[in-house]
Length: 317
Image (tube, rainbow, N blue to C red; front, side, top):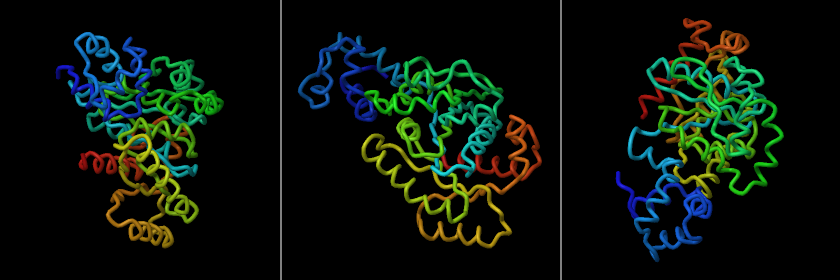
């Protein structure tokens, strides 16, 4: 695809989270030029296009020209203990077993995702990329599976990120240079609707909501959906809801079945996955052993459920 005035306009309109002032600064373009271009008052000449091309490629323009960019999915729920990290670990491994190349990103300062893959106290981590705009630190953990890790150092970065101009877009910028190297990028979000979760939603194509069929978890669902809607309206209009996956399900517990039926009736037309993740002690044991469920016990209910979930997501592509 050749870079033209029109392709630049199309790219900027599809990526409205980008700061035009910052793009102009990095490209050496006159201040206010891109705003005039978007309004139709000016056109980029050949020198402008030559200057801005490497900058746009840095932020993902190359993705549209070559290999299909990765699908970025953030796994969200502001309640802790509902299977976000477990889902990120095992869904990513299931995708790999289906021949996909995957990057997982730990956006939770507890670092459970990183620890689940055997990375304790990483020297380089996501916070360095968010605050210092360093390249996203990526470590290989398995064939076709990489991780960008975090630990407690991330906890102290929320205020700095909030006060940084365009802080909510830093993760998106960090991901853009590598997005064409993967088929899927999964972001493990913290148990809070804070700047880190918002950053993940800005960077993502879709949100996967993990939901335990307990009343305490269900009561917060409206807040999650409201936050996603605000991000869609204000920042990332292309953000979709991948769907709801029920986790920690006790199939023999009548109240769990009743709660799942209630959610399905309350959200007609909403994508609720047929696959449910059953409560399975092997899932907890695998995470404690710092491995995925397939490596720990490939014949367990947990392995079966996460493979079914991966297949369901892939079939919807």
